[in-house]
Every structure is written in C-alpha cells, then in structure tokens.
Length: 112
Image (cartoon, rainbow, N blue to C red; front, side, top):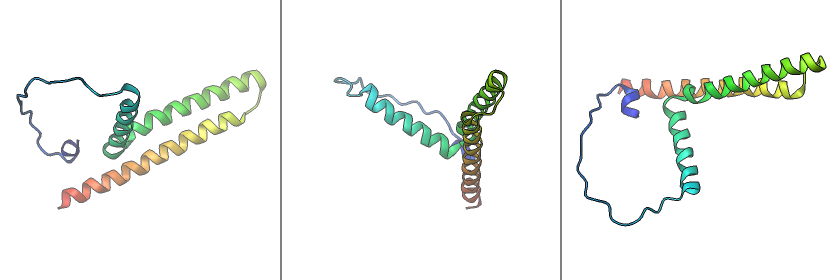
C-alpha cells in the first residue's frame, strides 16, 4: 500500500508454491480481532479519511436524527444528541489531523 500511495509502479508477479500440508491453526475470534486491528491501522496510516469520514458522518446523522426525534416528541435538545454531534466533530477532526500527518509523511518521502 505504501507503493500505491507513493505512486511507485506495482506489477503482478505470479509464483508457484507447493501443496499445503497439515491443518490450519487460525482461530476465528482471536485471529479475527487481530486482523481487524491490523486493517484499522493500515487504513489510518495510508488513507485516514476513508476510515474516519464514514464513522463521523454516521455519528452526525444519528445525532441529527435523534435531535429531530426528540425535538418533535419532547420539544427539547437532549444530552445524547449533543454527545453524538460532538463525537462526530471530534472523529472528523481526528481523521483530518491523521490525513495531514499522512500527507506530510508522503511529501517528505517524495522529496528524498
């Protein structure tokens, strides 16, 4: 992914491997959680806004929806609406900051 992000050419090179012997030792829950963490790290390192923007927009939509519901039914602004909206803004700003750090990292790599 670093080569894709930096604009280097990438080619497909087929390899031939022997037949696997034995049984897989992968456990779905333990190794699945590790895999999910690795994917989140890769996403946050190479393209942070693709990770943070959907989460932020989902929280913002939930906050606006919940605010609309409570305003229509109870005619007030609730703490949960404020929490969801603030969390969406903080998540967006974290993604924006991560995007800037990532851009600086790759701009520095292009200068070398």
